[in-house]
Amino acid sequence: MNATNPPRGLLLDMDGVLYHGERVLPHARAFLEATARLPRVFVTNNPIRTPAEVAARLRDLGLGEIPAGDILTSGVAAARWLAKERPGFRFYAVGADGLHRVLAEQGTEDPEAADFVVVGEGPGLDYDTLTHGLHLLLKGARLISTNPDATVDAVRDGEHLVLPGGGALVAPFAVASGQTPVPIGKPEPLLYEMALERLGLSAADCVMVGDRPDTDIAGAARLGIRTALVRSGRFAPGEPWPEGLPRPDWDQPDLGALLADWRARWPKRFDAPAEMQG
Ligand SMILES: [Mg+2]
Image (cartoon, rainbow, N blue to C red; front, side, top):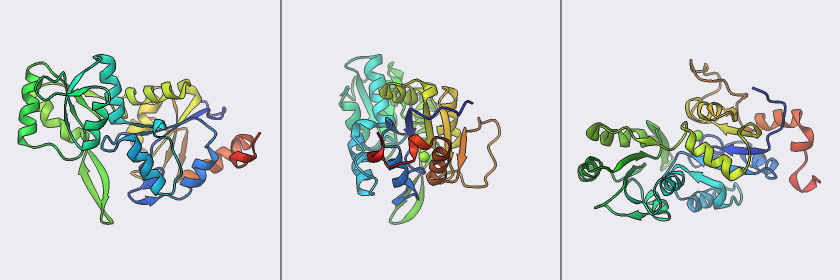
């Protein structure tokens, strides 16, 4: 793919790119500073936190003031998509609090007459919620999956944990009802399309920076967005490229190396600190 034009906008994954668990990744701050003049959308498949909570987390990690409006979670994307499909929608949600809250900004929580059963991540799935959701689905509600991840990484008390992801949590609803869920998050196109809309740019003008070949890179490449993989999260330096997945335009160990590459290519765009450029 053509990598000769500097990006006019960025889509940035966060976990494994800017931070990993509670740890800020090397060069994340420098990268954010060097790209501060570009329009950016911070995209995440994680539907647990609201954009305001994500912004607070970035601030607490010392990554600066990112406006909540620049943060697009799979929960927010789900809420917007549902509002477009059915204005004033009614929903039954299974997942963490943050998901219920972002959905309630666009629709109404109504466990008795839901148009949609929305399954996210975090606590909420048990025998009763599965039974209730199944009954709604059998009565005609549509099944929505905020994100297809089989597992997600988490840190609790300094310890790395692997938790069930949105794909694993929606599976029992899909099996029981026979419905195929509508998928919202990466690598499906919806989240990217909403991010491009927010940036007001075409796919070819943007670069997606992520740490996962199967979601971040594959999904963006499918839409014609240029891609930069950083091997600072899920995918380690030296790991062979997974067969059948598109190669990224940049494949770098971390954001520092990516920034160095961009500075060498486009010194005017990325060299000086933002306040020194005209
Ligand atoms: Mg990631």
